[in-house]
Image 1 (spheres, rainbow, N blue to C red):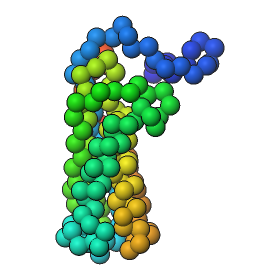
Image 2: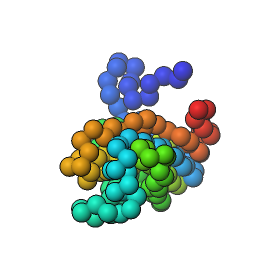
Image 3: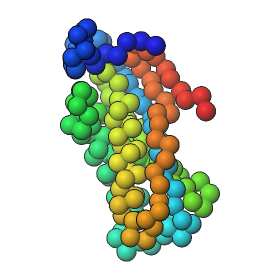
Image 4: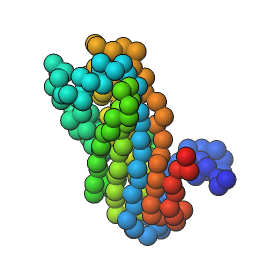
Length: 158
């Protein structure tokens, strides 16, 4: 395993210096799952929630979060992302799967932006639906795939 780059030789926190890195196209895809009661999933799928379209609000929240990741995670670089996309699929009658894909032409990757987008989209679903289903759980937030940069292509094995 490589060294932790956010600490210097004395153990002090630091922002990684990317100024010598070449700018390349970078992309990351992350996912999250929200487990809920079947009636809650039906309400979301049928767009029947009194608060409005849960998926569209969560999509916007995820995109906005990706754009602000550098403000949320202390040592993340603020990045001029070129694309942020949040998609939803229904897995059975109790799981909403969220997938976020983020792209940038830059000197560092967008893994944190994709993870933040998926996480905030999931939190938004919870917030909008908690009045009808407080037992919802947000699960399995992880990086699915990463492209570009020195470390190359990563795809989750499972």
